[in-house]
Length: 78
Image 1 (cartoon, rainbow, N blue to C red):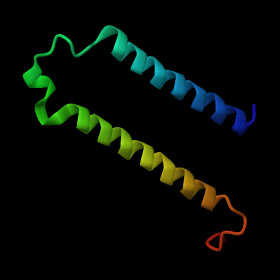
Image 2 (cartoon, helix red, strand yellow; image 1 turned 120 degrees about the horizontal axis):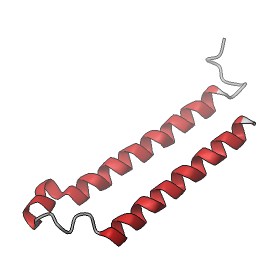
Image 3 (cartoon, helix red, strand yellow; image 1 turned 90 degrees about the horizontal axis):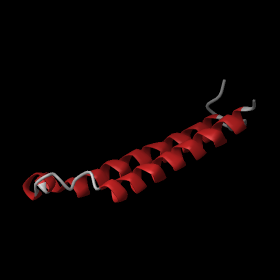
Image 4 (cartoon, rainbow, N blue to C red; image 1 turned 120 degrees about the vertical axis):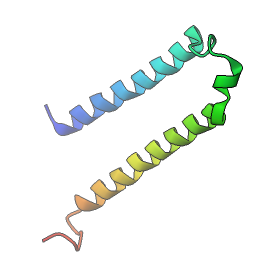
């Protein structure tokens, strides 16, 4: 199995997993039993959004770094 196929399968599984988590969050309403005081501590929605943003930016820059490192014209290669 090629590395390209493995990467594609991984990305599909991650995408489906995120979609499943979003669906479960909307369907089962996991925060419904938690009091409003606890839900709004430190703006948990804002914090969750920023955490996801930082993770996505990290993956983006890691991908750019890997692309640069695999470039045969990279002057930093030995």
